[in-house]
Length: 310
Image 1 (cartoon, rainbow, N blue to C red):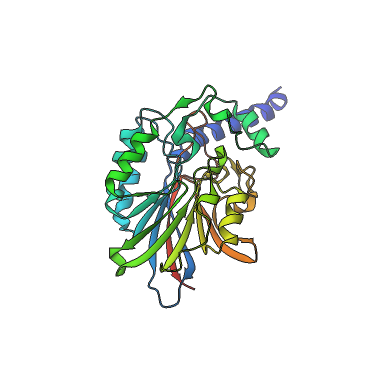
Image 2: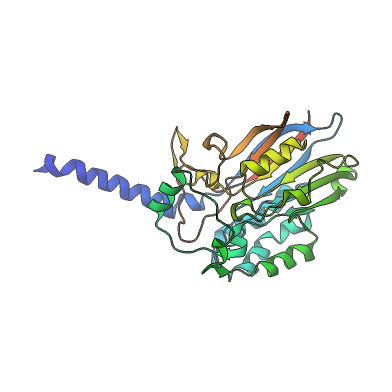
């Protein structure tokens, strides 16, 4: 009798322990990942870029807020926020408070779909199955049908008031006081996941009068990566994927929630298009949708990228 029920009970216990870890422990194991990217012009001094992404703030997440505030101690040359700051329409003040110390540094931002629209409950098993089958993205009308409007305008106004530059389908320049006036050019897109990206409005490639140019987008859909790379951008920063969120140890991610391959779901890689090659960095982010608040073998993160001369 003991042998008959021992194996199923053991499997159930392991499954329960894994679920408890994925929901109660790993989502709070915030970490900083450090990456070196040899991409700057010859002779340029290194630049420290802090990328934060996919915060998915829910009211009351004090540990996450304190951790984000602590990142200001890194004293980056500039900050890039690649979107999905919200997972709760009431959390705008907490996002601004958490990022407040970082907004004392130069920064740029794009928004993701969860900044515009509140999440809806979904069956996690169905979600994973759909992504594994390659179903991702939303059509032109889906986001506004029955969706909860998030107060993204308040978030935008808070970022703008602090001096961060809005990269919604636009281009901008930032001079870095910490780097002897190093002149950075940024080109950003609105979220391709909900088809708000308009590359035709920013086409033209890197600004030849700037010292260095970077492409920024929330979701690393191939059409956006192809466009940035074919135009000659040496570096593209993105988020959205959560690093796969639920990964298999020693194997990796099962899904990316876009048409990017799982081998590049997070971290530094390269992308080729139109005879050009770009470095691509995808942040695994530091949060998750409030209705699927789980992570396994994919801790929440921010990344400090050190850009060095090629």
